[in-house]
Length: 161
Image (tube, rainbow, N blue to C red; front, side, top):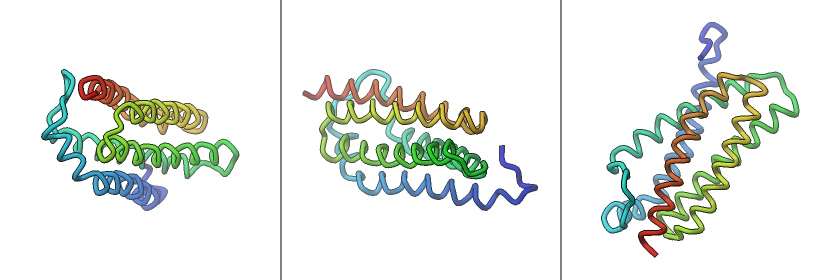
């Protein structure tokens, strides 16, 4: 997955740190909203305990970082530029979803925003696949988790109207 012989570990580490920083920013911006969510919002069946979310997101951001580093190392091209643009766009949309959901409690709009996020992840994954199959495959857990997050978001919306 990471070719240490070529000295690629540095750009991979930087890429992971960038992705984790996006996750850290999201957590920092929404800390109070997450506490309110944990304590007072009705949740749908299959909602995991609160401790699961930071663990899963830390792993997902690390996978995103490794994946993006693999794309970064591809020869410059329109496809690479497009893939990295989609990567950045989905990171931004991801952070903003947390604010919409946890802080603003706009559950319906957050659900629509999450559909946008999922579409960006799909587009990014397909573009990554054109350049590096492993980079694309590293996005699959993220796609699945955001699909599950969609179920949770929709359930919270319906239960807390």
